[in-house]
Amino acid sequence: MPTLKNMILCRRFARRLINERNLSATKEFVADNSIHHEITGVPPGCQRGPRAMERFLKPYLRAFPDLRIVFEDAIADRDRVVTRWRMEGTHQGSLMGIPASGKPVSIEGIRIDRIENDKIVESWMQMDSLGLLEQIGALPRSLSLRPLALLARND
Image 1 (cartoon, helix red, strand yellow):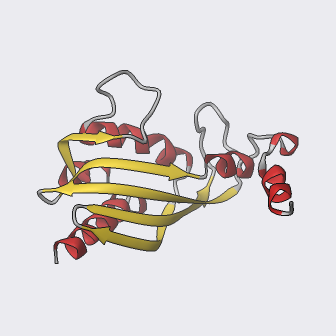
Image 2 (cartoon, one colour):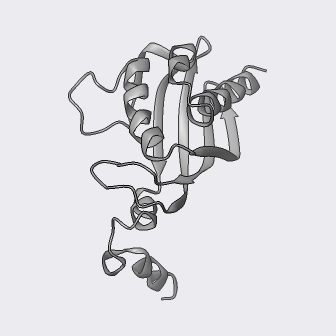
């Protein structure tokens, strides 16, 4: 039963923070001593705790005010939950210096959470950042690596 409880916690975390835009609920789901490996390029200590997760999500929620997450798959084993998700929204605000394009986006990702005492204590996430940049027009088509990936499959 703990694995199901952990899976529900992770889904509620993403829905509450992303779909409902309730960043004040972060402390309800994320432990004070948590470490978030997906947050990179920041000073030491800025990957830890609920506040780090809020700072990570804020720019995306501002840039995509209609952002929604949908879960495609979830697997739980002991203290780990793996979710495969899709996020969709419209680029209506600046993101990392990239002006709003008004374009819709749909990207996929995978997240792994480790749970202790009913809170996320460690997380890893990979998302299709290249696809995101392509969809908002920040990456020239000629620089896209996707055609190379398609060619490699045909060898």
